[in-house]
Amino acid sequence: MTTPPPSTAAAPPPPAAPTPSATPSPVPQAAPSSSTPPPQAAAPAAPSTTTSGASAPVPTGNVAGWRQVFSDGFDGSTLGSQWRTYSGQPGGSPYGTWSPSQVQVSGGFLNLRNELQNGQWVSGGLASRIGQTYGKWEMRFRIDAGDEIKYAALLWPDGPSWPPEIDFAEDAGGNRSGTTATLHYGGNNAMVGERVAVDTTQWHTMGVEWSPGRLVYTLDGQPWATTVHQGVPSESMHLAIQTQPGGCQGGGGAFGCGVGNPRTTTMQVDWVTIYARA
Image (cartoon, rainbow, N blue to C red; front, side):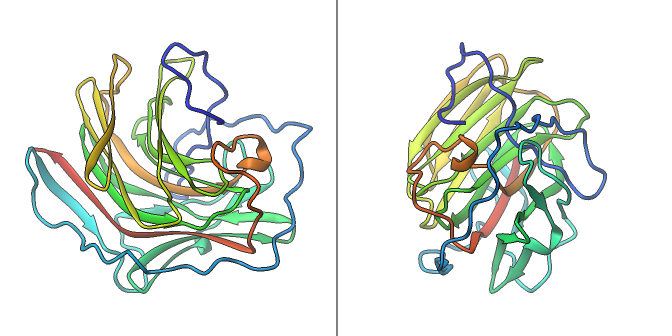
């Protein structure tokens, strides 16, 4: 979406939603438009991934008001059993697909890769198996600039119905000069949205603190926006992290479109941590 709508705005079609490859939940699918352009050719060179600035240690132990229930620093070379990867076509991305092969763990990082293969974008996404009602989630990450590839870190319902959805870091392609946070609620997918300026080509920690009727979005450990609303969910949800095509090219860019598309666009995650209410 171009900008997060205010709480009174009519809702646009739903954004791309997680499709786990194991025990999938129903996913709202945006109808492909006949005017959807084909994938753009990749640019001659790709930006290199970087570990600079990613040295913040994985948080361990409880924090005030919250009890840590899970953390992952993505050590080793395989994804832990607490995660499940996506496969298949993302909702709203008619010329892309998700593949578990694009989710890689190496060098202490989770890498979600996006590549143009045989005229189709192939992307990576995954979901946590840990569901809970209320809590605190944080993720330290960065992502390469690129017009086509969008990303989201979000909470997705454990049950069969959608919405709700809580996106706490999301953009739809471009130079990564900002990110959005959006609460989706109600049968018509109403939204309450926020946006903040931050360079996500550099390492930052984004998070959300979810309590009854209230969402606090955090950036590098500090609150940057608060949503107090009757649409805040009260059902069990789980973390999902995803990348996929359909950003600026699909008309959804919000930040700095026009930077082109590298051959490979990678979202790197340094660590993830989850807390329950103390």
